[in-house]
Length: 328
Image (cartoon, rainbow, N blue to C red; front, side, top):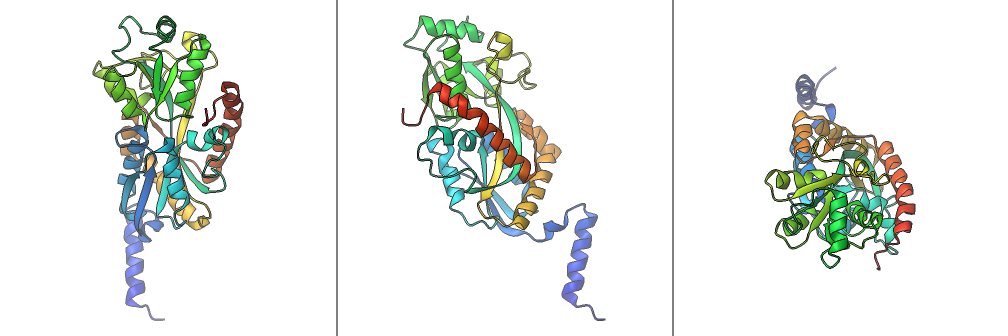
């Protein structure tokens, strides 16, 4: 039996990869992978994309880069990936809200979160926080105190969130309703733009992922009044939960997930899932996301699909009770 030079080199390359602890799929790189997020640079969504891209470069693809397709509360990014070829070269990273909540608030959503996308892996989980800036008196340090201030100053009662129809938006609405006060909502293209307006005194408060606030809290530019998890966030251990402050029904968290366009081949999904799991488990990724208040977590495609279905079922009645639609 004769062995060609090409076969010999291929076998030697595979052996080298195995010796280096790299999976076999690392040989079969694609030229480039584009990770698409619907939110601007500097925020939590962008941060996880860039951390994962660093770990996947040279493995799954020769080059991995992040593209920020902002607008329409994250919808532009979903539409962009929906229209991309299902060849494993374009990957969506999105918060749950765009997939699990938007179908309940938009009569004509330009995508079907189940039919138009292929789940690949969970990316992370996180809690939300509610913070106030210099427009709110320094005597206000708890959620009940903020709600009392809103009642006394109805013309100033406003909060910002990263997108209309997102979990942070509804948290702000539910906070107001718990005290019988109407807190007006201002939608931004991401949490960081909202926070910049808050620390600049243009709006009083912002609802968003806990990790978005930590650097501003540390700098003394804003005050974190409460967090949405069932227990205190390890990223803000001195901040009480909404539950602790008497808001028993306001226990929420969220996740970011990775998706390919619909009809992506099973082999491509499996290879990308393996690459994402490795990237998310890397100590550098775990510690890097922790700085942003994110807990790195991966999953199988089936587990991600089940998680989305559970959240769609949970949020339907909540959205109906709030009465919000994208047309209001």
